[in-house]
Length: 432
Image: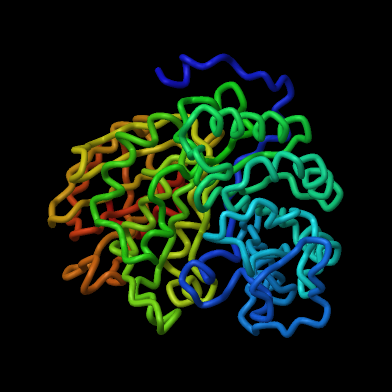
């Protein structure tokens, strides 16, 4: 209903707007393992004057060429579409909390980030790099720089940008949700469309179905996402509420897929805990709708749990149909979705604070056909706080008449991939 209250698409040819599954140089900075800033030498940066060539690198800058290549390789080897890189451009030494208008120019890279070389390398691995434009709450500066920034993106093959508006809005008196800023967000989306650039807006106003009119607005944050799990943690039932509130206005770039919940293992100075089980994290790819989905954790954590990571590799991001099987806001949600243009289905179930048993049927499947379902679920004794990495994986033959009873841990859930299979693959697999 909300989408239909918006005007139809104003973009005649939408062939350049493509759903994406991506990774990124992001979580390592969010957790504090790496930094966005290149050096500790500067307390103030003046664009066009501050010379980084003789600055001493801090040794923790995440967006360096060698590190980005590692992400590109891992993404390519595992079938992903893109890699986001944050902290590539100068200015991050003074970006937050200073009410400074001209922090970034959105075109000048740090000395250790090879724009041209990485563009070619990503292209050789069939990976699309995603640009990052953090405004530091300064929309007027961003508007002045937009054309130059988008031209740089087109020159080096970037066709998507993640925008950010962290901090108080400049000028003083404006805020993230007033008319002045709503006009700015729309201006950015329309300007990006003229360059055939997709926009993933973070810290932006909550959407109200605008993506129907401007479908290049492929992603949007505008609610408390996964990053807050690194800032003390979100309540385990948070993800059972968002589909009934924030997501009514449009897709959310929630950035799921965290497998290491104890963040002190990534950064000893961060004692935050991700309040979710691994099975719950997998389910989010289905329950938190978005045609832009991130595998947010570090590559090494996916290598540790390669069997669970398989679901993230398999799951679709674009759908032909969705069936909401069971739901109670704040307590649980179970969704089945049909991958666009295929006979494959995926199910996600997220649970709140209390242990419960989910009971669902598979009547959404076409009758008379057999499928192989791979069920990724909480193991006995799993708990978002005390035992979040306990999961089980089992395969079963399912039909439209099958039923499932599945135990869900506090802060847990389950995810299911359902693929058509021939008789040879069905042989030896138990029926559900």
